[in-house]
Length: 429
Image (cartoon, rainbow, N blue to C red; front, side, top):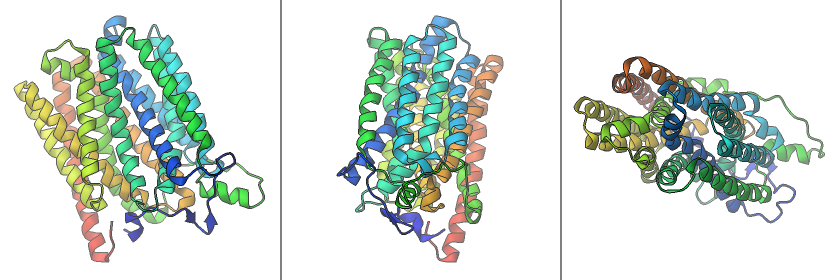
């Protein structure tokens, strides 16, 4: 793998000096980086909030586990639609306007959630939310790489991978607290998020533009043409991409299961009726993931991915043991180990993948990564939800974990071979 895998590009790429966008004069590069990081965390936080509320929705509206996973999967499907339709939009239109549009859609989605009194508006809210995330995903990933502090160029990839886990963890525990202890949690939770998104929108409006294509278009004479939007993987990088994307699939299959059915499984094993338990389970998974990412932030990318895959395999084995014993303590330990592996595997694979595209096509490649991530998050979760209606939550969970373990083993073997080939070629990951 090229040596660029260990560094993010500087502010000057392909001979074009990136300048702040209109209205962002004087906005420091670092402040824009942290604004985008906050938007990433907030969008992921809002996406995990319904997970803590699903048990409440299920009880109040009489929804089956299969329908809950359909609601969850609709979000992932609309994220995919946003990625496929607008994945490279920020490469040509610019990061700022695409992020702003995503935030406006997120505000609309929160309003729909707050107004929901049944399945119809819940589905509509989840769909709009997914479109918001899909629209913003490529722009967020690319902007974080472009705006990373020059003194810490690897921070862009680190925040790209840690942001989702931080957001998911905060969303799970925050929503769990509100559901258990706050009045009208299915309304208050989303109204708080409306305010947070509105503040973020102001920050995005003031940040610097970083897209090389947008800067080049402005330098060429100010007339801007909207290019076709596509998901693109450079031909020379497709072999490495195929290897690394196996890890993404394994990581987000686990994430999808925990975000859809994890709270139900935790309540069952812990024999609890406290809604905070479901949110805390998601938070434990994501918190352990974030801790692992912070600990391994300076470790070489493929080595980090290998360590993460080993952690995933260990965590999955412990989950299977917990299910076999019916042990809540073992399940909690298993979730922590699984989360640590999840975080490390995502960090390592994303850092390696982020080096595979030229700056002008970074949004396209980032969007491609998220396409696979959301497919892995949605399709297995829906299948698990449907099988739960037939075979029960316990048996379905055992089958799911065993299948994901097989994918992890395959990804581990492929990643080890890639690392060995890189050493032979004298490259670094």
